[in-house]
Length: 450
Image (cartoon, rainbow, N blue to C red; front, side, top):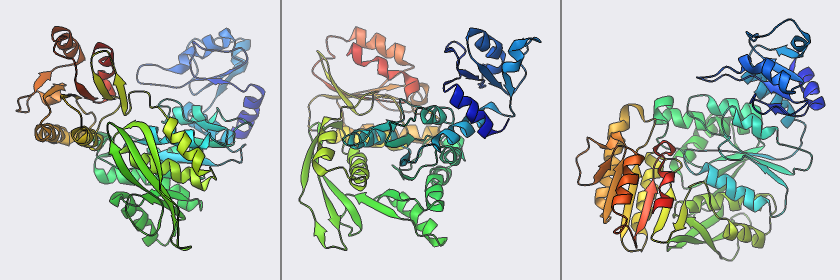
C-alpha cells in the first residue's frame, strides 16, 4: 500500500496513535521502535482495544490467523511511513509553515513567534519538546482547516537530522536562532553542527523560500555567504542590534533589572525610512533574549501584524518550562534555566546573571551533556567563568565537575543538593539564585525547595 492509499485510509480514520495504552476507537496504531521497546509486539493488543488498523514493519509474534490479521498493514519502515504520512497531511494545507532550529533559544523563539502571530491568526505550533523525527510528524498531524499558519520547531543531535525534518515539514520560511557547541558527541565537531543546522537554509533556498537571519551572528552570516558563493541568492529578512543598513528590524537593550526591557524600530534603507523607537518591557530574564524577541518581531512584521499588537504579545508573554524564568518564592528570587545546557547557553546565562544589578548572588550549576572529547575542557571553562564572576556562593552538580580544582561546593547529583538545601534552610534566604543545567540534572526539582 503506497502513501497516498495509506493517507486515504487515514482520512477515514483521522487519528494515529503510537501508544498501545491509548487506543481511541477507530484509530490507527503505528508501531514504532525504541531502545527498550518494539511497538510491533503491541499491534494485536491495540486492535483488540479498538484500533481500526495497525501499521507494522514486523509481523507481531502473537499474531494468529484471525480476522485481526486483515487489519495489520505491513510496511518497510514504520518511522519513515509516519513521516511520509505526516508530509502528505501537511500538503493538504496551503498555509505558511515557519521552520525553526538552532542550538539555543529555539523553543523560546517559537513561543514568542506563536504569541505574536496569534494576535491576528489561528496558529498551530509545536507543543513541548516535540521537535524530533517522531515529534515533528505528531505536530503536523495537528494541522486542521482552522489553522492560518504553522510554526514547527526542529531539533537535531546527529548529522542529517534537520534534512530529514525539513523534508517532512516542508517549511515555507524559517530561521536558525544560532549555532553553538552542543551535542558534539553526535555531531563530531562544531562544523558538524553548522552543516546540520544549515540544512534548513539549504531546503528553503532550494525551494525559493525566505530566510530570517540575525545579521550580527557571524556564524549564520558565514553560512549565508557560503550558500551565496554557490550561486544562489536567497531572499533574506535581517534583524539585529547593529546599525547595518540592510537590517529590517533593529533592537537595543535598555535594561535587565532583572527582566529584559528593550526598544526596537523598523528600518528600510531603500526608502530611506526609519520608524520611531518602541519600548517593550518583557517577563524574560537575559539580554540574550533580545535576539529571540527581534526574530519574533521580524516574522510578525513580515506577516502583517501591526506594531501595537506585536508589542502587546511580547509584553504579555510569560515563559514556562524552566526557560529564562524568574521565580519569586517565600525566601528567594530564582533565575531558573534548567531545561537545557551547553557551552553557549551556559556562558550566556552566567554572563547575564553577572550583569544583573541584584544583591546576594548564588549559582547552582549542573553538568552539560553530549560533549564528547571536549567534556573536561568545557566544564573547566564553566568553572573559570564562575570564578571570574565572584558570586557569593556556587554549587556544582555532576561528576564532570568533581576533578576540577576550585573552591566551590560540589555535589554528585540533585539528591545531594536537596539534602544540602534542607540542612542550610535558615541561611538560604534573601538570595538571587541562578539554577542552570541540562534537564538530566533534574535541577528543575529545586525551586520548590528554595
